[in-house]
Amino acid sequence: MMDQDEGMRSAAKSGWFSSLFRSIAGSNAALEMSDLDPALKALKDRLMTKNVAEEIAEKLCESVAASLVGKKLGSFTRISSSVQAAMEDALVRILTPRRSIDVLRDVHAAKERGTPYVIVFVGVNGVGKSTNLAKVAYWLRQHDLTVMLAACDTFRSGAVEQLRTHARRLQIPIFEKGYERDPAVVAKGAIQEATRNKSDVVLVDTAGRMQDNEPLMRALSKLINLNNPDLVLFVGEALVGNDAVDQLTKFSQKLTDLSTAPTARSIDGILLTKFDTIDDKVGAALSMVYVSGAPVMFVGCGQSYTDLKKLNVKSIVNTLLE
Ligand code: GDP
Image (tube, rainbow, N blue to C red; front, side, top):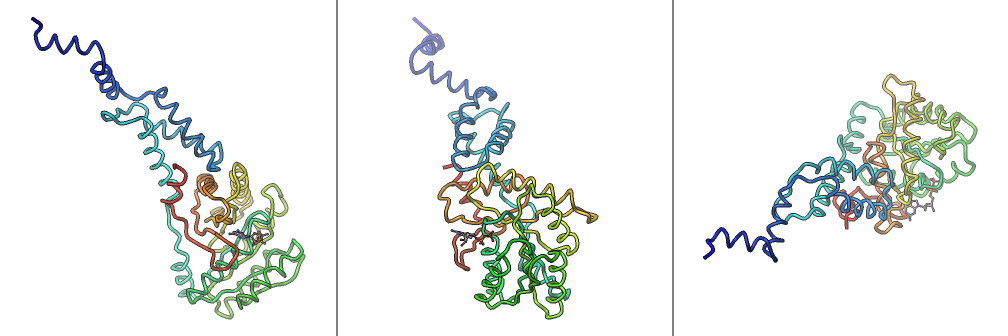
């Protein structure tokens, strides 16, 4: 006759009972890197198909791994679910602004002080800088604020006319001094004019420039140092993949390096354009926030003035992980 314990032991040596026993015992062991590797690799690939820049997908997976190695999983918890949950936490943390910038509140605060609130729009040509500047103007006007545009792209021919067209359509005043002027001085003139006529906000258009173009970056840095705007908004396309990292890193690095202000200025926020054209490839939002530490404050989602939204963090995270 076998006693009960012996019976259990013999059953444990074979069949489903044995495998169940092992899987429960296994799930109580601390996680090792090798356990996580396959799930992390799959997740990295998924992020990259959503247009997250490769180096950022890689770094995110490393931080998820670091948060899980050595942890014990609860019984029947799948490794892939734990990896997914840890990644979700990381993504929400990155995309949720550390300091929230409430433009409308800050505009009202500036108004109380009797000064216009100044936003400088920066970014590479063709990304939708002037169109989205006009959308922000429209949005501010919807909130009963008075706006003035400042045509400080004195470099690219046609830029002033383009901004004038938006100003005319929106019936908003524009401050312009033509081309070949120092944009820093034009911006200063616009702010003085806005102070005189009590405009609430000045939106400054600047020449689109490549992050590698030293003279243009220097001119932009001068404009920012001379005028100390309330907000420097980087306008970037949601269409970019790996290039998003290069553009933004160099842009903010150059601005910081060239800054002559006591506390160096860089990019305060991001306006992500052409979001309507990317389907589920929402990775640029993540890449840009990751490299700059600046929040996505506006999302451009079409060609008309009403096509401006706030970033929906939850929806971005869900899209990245689905
Ligand atoms: P800039 O050179 O950066 O000032 O770019 P523009 O403002 O001239 O925009 C370039 C093109 O992108 C224009 O055809 C715009 O209509 C288009 N555009 C700008 N924003 C958006 C957007 O959010 N969605 C889409 N689909 N097109 C946009």
